[in-house]
Image 1 (cartoon, one colour):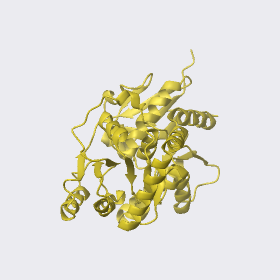
Image 2 (cartoon, helix red, strand yellow):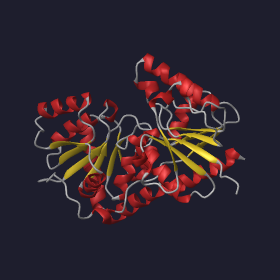
Image 3 (tube, helix red, strand yellow):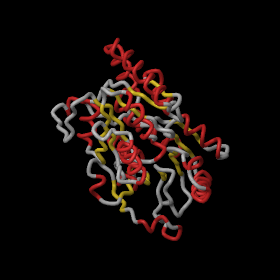
Length: 356
């Protein structure tokens, strides 16, 4: 029996389930494994438990040493897919190579040394790529702005899917948070570019609401947010709940009045489409990829003046509540447009195209 071609999925970011990289790795591999019949998929992960949710995949243990050139993987594969642009784990041999680019935020928002390191890494990965995929048109545009893509390299935009699970599975979930008022919800890594602090002056004016922010708030930016909460007298109305489970996330999405996401830089923005799946009004900054993802179903802040943010929020909530049934249909339809099964099928088609 002829052996199936082996595809190496460089996916060690599976370990970072609280990040967009981790979510992309998890959901793409899960759906690739479900539909795959043509290839042997080899998943690079820190532990076997990382791949326990996947059917019919092979395990390759990730070692940090493999980031260094002398320890690059020497096994030969039919194709190598680098699922994350920031990894230094590479094949020793020249072979068909696909790179997925999630964002180029570091090109604008980091010091020159960090930017140069990232730039060199990207140049190396682009040079060996047969195809480059992007998670949004915005990311494709930015990549072509900063880097010259060689002629002949296939470029594709494959949107992320929606990881939101049917709300019926979470109807009986409880949370430690017991709200006395309607609440707004936000979610993400506590980095300055997430811009959570801009919500506080708006909330001071929107006195009928509380605010829940989930994410790793033990970081430096989290400490800054805590000080701002104290300074603005919002301690009783703003809760930083830290890292949360999937069930807790769905509890907050299911029970919030609206999802608020004032981020300054996103390659995609998975939480936005998760909130839409629950038919929640979403309020976004009009920055980077967010208008592409939210389209005409979201409300947008053009700046972060507290009164402007409040006006957009109050007018948006009024518009939503005046025709909730119609808005709910639009939101769910937009959420359903992003589908991991379709994304996985797009990648399968690209694998076949490159291997031919």
